[in-house]
Length: 479
Image 1 (cartoon, rainbow, N blue to C red):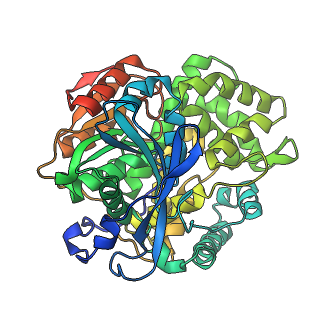
Image 2: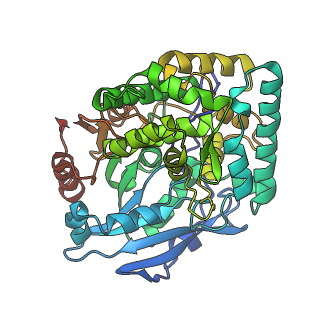
Image 3: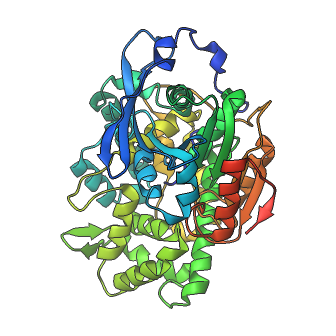
């Protein structure tokens, strides 16, 4: 998912230390998970956690889990999260259980995927827009209108969005106030205990690396191993986050252009000539329309992995012929919209967690400056305002944030491993370099163009990551 942060504080502070939690969590730490079959060689369960850790005797919610049991010589559990925020760890674990590259890990670990609170199979789920409202928002051109009236309309819509989230989500503002990474990390430690593991072995992708880094900071002595792939730098603020990510996608588009060598999208100028007319005239895409914003999003989605480039090339050629169906399908995959028009809820969870995790920007001039910097580093975005809606949403979010960007302060942490890709569009390479430095991790550099790489078929990366998770061996390396 595209990363966004909402920050403006000049001296951000880290989230509260776990020691500030009420001490009586015994009924949660000693719970027994009721696993039941939910697929071939798969079991599912729910972990009960406090809605609000400041009131552990109050209402409870649940975290959805999926497990594939170790085949032999079990070391313990390997807990996995795919990122987002809003990604389903249960789906990721089910997919990895069928991945040949993961076989050595499936022998030694119970592979456990978890859906963070408010996400996926966890209950209740964060709910904001209906399916029809999500479709209408994507088809709208309001984000491309930077006139004073257009900006006013954007702010009204984003304010209404936050209010709708509070109204439509069970427990309303109370849940929204407790869905950030601070609380996900607390849930993760309860999960570790419920799994019977003295120490946590964890695999996090993308936003999952932020969860892992926060866990390392909060519970360093409870860590056995952390492998963090596609790292987010928790010290990075809003403007830097948006600007560096936009530049990351520009870099990936440039690499795509070199590979493609196609007249329709081989350069930024060619890409703009292809998609900018959609601002005024969306393109037919079956029974729907391809908007400019969806064209940008679909291109983002196609740039995540080099393996998708042939399909992206074909989709852009299709746009040139007057048909937006395939590029719209790329955007649908990004937004997790199925063929029946149903959304997974990932986008709503994404905004809720981002707004909980970062101090907010309320200065419109600062938002406008951030947009200008984004376009300076990523001219292929010109014509629209992707991502700035997130700043507006967080600026009027109905509950205050619970965390802020900061340099992690970690002591007594065992060796960890960060994987960073040289042309990662969504979490640019330097973020992994910085996180590895902050956590004193080994850094595995992958020279390629894609977002996250572990267990995706690169033998060099997979050997290093598997050796680390099984034996704890890690050193700086390149693949």
